[in-house]
Length: 395
Image (tube, rainbow, N blue to C red):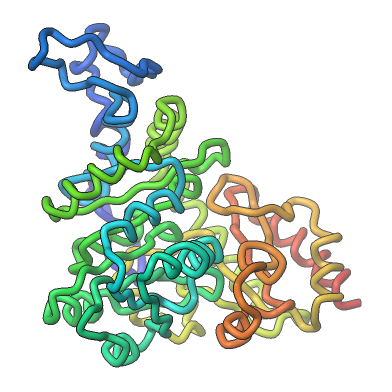
């Protein structure tokens, strides 16, 4: 079987097959349907008081959700998958594993929504959060306390694309009996499988690349730890943060083209990054797949590639950024990421709007930092659009 030629780790040769078939086996349905039917039922008839056919009530479980959870687990080479109403819903379930008085070490450069959840909700419940730069594992080690229960990070981070050495994080955490969790939304299980690097739980916003078409909102947690899975399963039900069967079907459909889409996203984003590095209107490009990235070698050692996500610093400030966003035509000024269409966002006025100014400044999230979610359109069209917008911004 042929392998993709790349400086990164080899891609799982069976990934596309698993994405298309696991969970969607026709034999499980009476009709032998190739596409899993959507089960909208909220309740299920029981055979007797102590005998069900596997389903009782829609919040507890649902055939459409079960199909998706099985596939997600397979793609991460995990034992268990759990879906939630959103990525933040999944994060809410994760932090609900802990109690007042517990301590969490968290990456300082994380999605703005996660930052707000931790600051405005979790910290008010008596769970202490320490934010550190996780690109240096020594920072994590220094932040650990006797009551530390979780080490949480994104890699690459949103929006500055910093990369954390997951093997070292896992090794440190295991030596101190601390749970680890990683947000893998930017890369998906196609390009990175944190569980295989020693991480305990992986979090996804399925809204992004896993669905890939900007038309379903959902989150997920995957793990091979049976104890953690059982506790999360209770929380999924008790908190009621479950996705609709229809959205589950949408994401299941999206997963079937994940491998193809991710290859196109990677190809386009690399070309965009290379183009931007040479453009006179650009100060700096942040893309882990480019040799200029400070964690380029680490990226190659723990991933099999990179997605369509990159950021760059435009020469100028907020005024130039406004001109850029006014000029773009194919790239759309819009929140979110990971769809087939190309999007652009200014994090300071978007996903990180409510992050404290001091924290943004420390992380380099400035008014001239532009985040791109490069889609799978024609690369020539994308480069032409960026070129004319950059010229309009700095002319």
